[in-house]
Image (cartoon, rainbow, N blue to C red; front, side, top):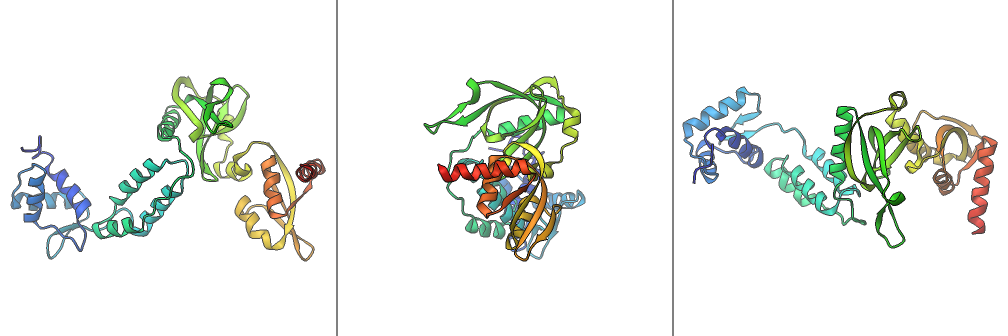
Length: 321
């Protein structure tokens, strides 16, 4: 049965066939193109295929006329770039196992035939340690709608219970915020937004947000949002835990300079402290998570004194428990 509207869509189908099934090693001549079109229910003749190929070339599509037929020349992504995309999707724990496989399959279609086969052989989709929120992509879409339309958004925020279930926090409270931007930190996606109720900038893990919707209210906190820098915000909030932002000085072994720079960026002030240690001055949100990170690398917090005292008390509690 002929494809409905097949003749009008013929050139689009030809483009799809070239994109999905051709490369320099797999050229498609006019006769073969007519056969593949007919398998899609679209009658075609060789002379019309030639005209369509010229039309695609005139339109700027990189269709190459080779010795044995036609093929797509340059693609948007190189194989190495597609491999990076696949690895990034596979490593993202907020993407479910099912969605990971779906995305990997879609990314694979961006490659030529040989590259796609090589990519499929290299792809290893790891088992996810936790069940991700399947609706995260819907939530992200709502966030972008709010950003595009300058509107507030509403959602419920979930948390883990001792029974290993996700339950709405604060009895199902509806959070209403003004989105600023999305950021990825420590393998999770976060929404950074202005909370009008508290008058503060706060962040929320996107995979814990449910029942997201755009409100018919304009965003507020314009000045607070405008003052934000996504890179600085991620650097200052260790593991994205909230705390009072302060300028502090930490002391650590010289061989850990790279570890500290990787965590806080290269703009921090470093100075030697004897032959074996270094001091760094940085501005961060001080929290127990920061204390835990410092403890993990064997660093100390030495200024200001009130924060240094809190850090010492933190260590004492750990030892005594």
